[in-house]
Image (tube, rainbow, N blue to C red; front, side, top):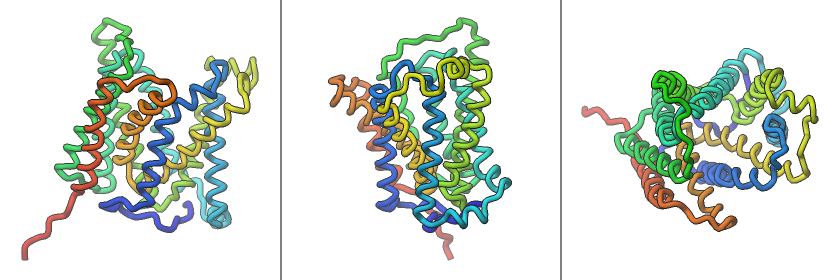
Length: 327
């Protein structure tokens, strides 16, 4: 079992503290800026698997540094167990790996609008599994806020302007290789998010330790996939750092910091609020594209903006409250 981190709540507070808001804002900015930073500093020749593995290593280094800064390395070494690690982090990491594979299958067989709409159901499954596993209920207003957020997410996805259509005309192929995989992936995403929240709040697994463990498991899965994958062949042929420049480290480290923030947000704010961060980050991306590339926000983005603001406001203002029994 990992060390207990001071200040980790056993339940999500009804109103976020200033520190939680800081984590939420920083993660929103990181998510929003990451696509632009990656586009500018990662050359086309860079092998995707090499950058992903480097990011996972950077996450581990950052997390170990933060644990050492808090003086918890010795206690972590004495209390860590393989069983506790696999229970808290192994299962979510494996679920996320399976989810990503299902999304790749689905995206190839669905048009972008259908994919985006079905993919946003993960917000509801996150809320459902946090209720089942953590008994964290949502008020009627919060459920309405989640509906608004999903609408905003779909509008933002449409605004990206993808013209990709379904690759197969066979209805069975669209159903079993498109719709079913993305729905299963949404269920898995909600389950993994709730399990991470459970591990941090109930099992007292620190967010830093979960980041390390999930990065290690994810890296091992990725390394195993390189045995016969095109990326694995490219690494063996050209070398791990093929196409890299010193600037490539910028998006890698930036993404690693985002991984640390994801763990903190899940621990302190919960998986549902993390969904709000992801959608809000799409607006940040649109704003940064306008500032640096001169690309104006789409009409759909302008429609989504008030929906996101409204949904966040409602979700924060109307938390679920236990009704007191009349004496």
